Length: 259
View: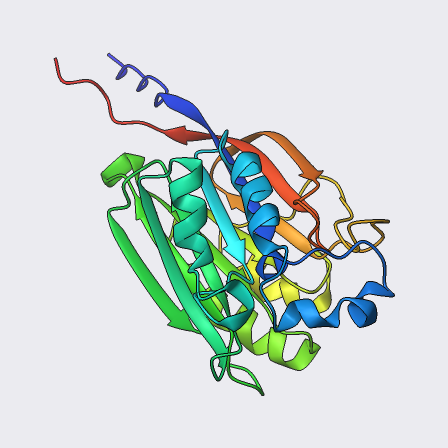
């Protein structure tokens, strides 16, 4: 007698958001990179933007942040990930500081989560200039295990190629995973090929422009998924940041109830 096929694993929907928050600054035109250059060193106006970001993040289960300030002059010495976690009601959060300019400015990746991670790891990424990293969270166990990584890649293609090679090696053994962040390149850029070749990750089904936020033309911010079903994928404004955020709903595996 042939063995009965195993029933399909149960899943549940989770809402994920990836956002480059520009350290809480607001930019609505190219000229404001000059006229509002003071916002890169002073905290004025950032609390209002952070409150808007917290309201944006609140409906989501997991939020990956890039350019989150860990506490410097420009953020009013506030750890922005901590502030957003508290305001958005996230019980778990982690911040990976990657770059600091004295006490004037700092930047890094962060994760806000309503799920308790089984493990949190952070890695520095290779590159011609130091200051980039990836924050890796692991959820579930056994058949329900899956990984979520948050990153922000370099501006230069040669550095991105090194960084993507590192990420491809790091994530190569994960059967179910998500890699989100500001990649500073399109999802079909030549340097992205190693990532698709060596991991389960696949490019998004459609090109969604995210930069600049006031007139999106370039596809720089992505949520790449492997081994999980995507229900929805869209770009949404991120409270004045020069990047649009990317919102995704996924089906992730859940533990079977004990009988």
